[in-house]
Amino acid sequence: MVIVYESKTGFTKRYAEMLAMKTSLKVFHVKEISMINKDEEIIFLGWMKVGIIQGLDKVRRYNVIAVCGSGTGRTAEPDVETIVVRNKIEGIPFFLFARRLFTVKKNKGHRPNYAVNICKDTEKTQR
Ligand SMILES: Cc1cc2nc3c(=O)[nH]c(=O)nc-3n(C[C@H](O)[C@H](O)[C@H](O)COP(=O)(O)O)c2cc1C
Image (cartoon, rainbow, N blue to C red; front, side, top):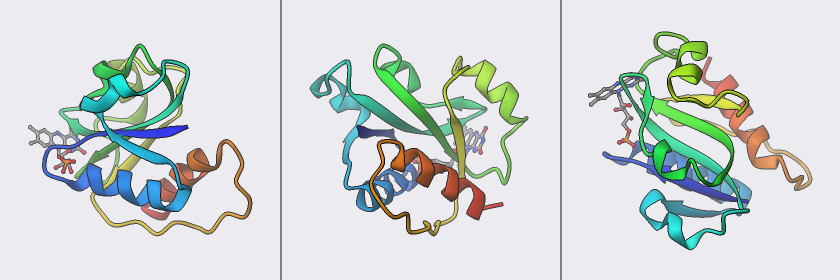
């Protein structure tokens, strides 16, 4: 499992690097996507631009198992369901990271879905 991100001004990059630090997963910028095996599980982080998750189109043919949108909105705008439909990520877990530094709960063990749990915790701590 790896982390892939798209970032313009650096906030999403920072989230990706924090997630990588906590999970010991490797982190790649989306422009490095060709280095990643098609079967590799990917947690994708992209910045939100009018409800569209930036960079997502570049990873669609890959094995994306979770998507995180980073934006300034306190909540998903207009709402999570619309974002999921608009970004065509039905069936893939979606998490919203508002522009605030997050604290991550310490999770014992290193389960395959450990990073996804951290995404969940991250989202919760921001509510
Ligand atoms: C044109 C534009 C549209 C944006 N639309 C949204 C949006 O729909 N929802 C949101 O939460 N943030 C929105 N934002 C805020 C960005 O997602 C936010 O600044 C983000 O942290 C940028 O990520 P980056 O630092 O990784 O580039 C928008 C910003 C710009 C410039």
